[in-house]
Length: 387
Image (cartoon, rainbow, N blue to C red; front, top):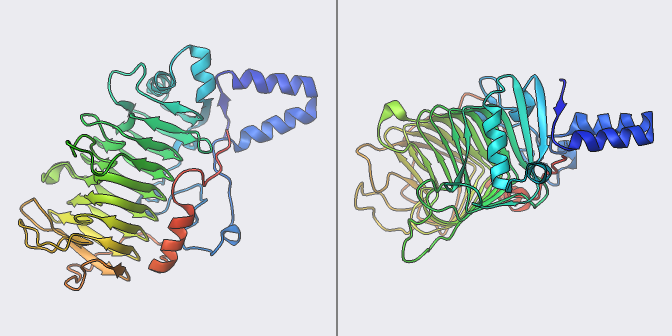
């Protein structure tokens, strides 16, 4: 794959090569050939050898289906930008700089875009608390080390395909356009991986001040949410924004995420086929997996600890806990429960209501192994992103 390097990085690398001769030129080209990826490691280098490799450069689950998800690497050429350098050279705030790069990429149908976020972004220069990833293809937005942060600003992925968001801390995004990450309007092949997403669980007096942490809406599909640390929030994650089947998203995998100190919607699912694999749910106040409107959910190899209030939901009569149909919608969803662990969580009443399974190949850990993997490898600062 040929690559086109833009911003001041091109000049810096060219200067080094000229000063140092052909040997340094070869080294620079080698660095370019590997830019944009997390460090590859074999299963033998992963302590414990878990079913899912936390260092993998490609998703598993639904985002790997129907052509897969490659992000910026999917372009015939790839433009790469270190955000701090681009912001300095353009005289823009970091958020404005990222917005401008994504806006300009709308005109690049065949090109890939990789942006390395190596600093904190706020609302400076933005009209809303969001950065649009809109009408684009082949985009990766990657945090560098533990420096990539969005404070009060989230992403809205609209009518876009082949998008990767990795290794970013996104927090305290206010209501309105207030999702940390929203995927909507026929977007497809999106991989949300190794991020830290949060706000405040018991924000008083307005617990709805913050919207969702990951909301997937309006016919979006082929999405994998993996290895994220999702915590301290009221309404966590939504799949399907209303009961209408003609606007329902579909084909979504959540695996190896840590869901901690949350209230509800972990996630709330309408209509969609969803695989909840090897996640760890801890300290969920109300209810976790809320399946409605014919949703089919394979709940497999998860660890549930202190999940659910144990109260009877007044709408559908289910006990609020790890899985059920809770507080809304006219129809239930369905769940296939397979090899889960429940600790201090109301579950004696639970049984499978469907034999739904997923169409792709995968390996599953035991819940105990999944817990160990998630505690070690979920969240930011784990993968090595090399600008």
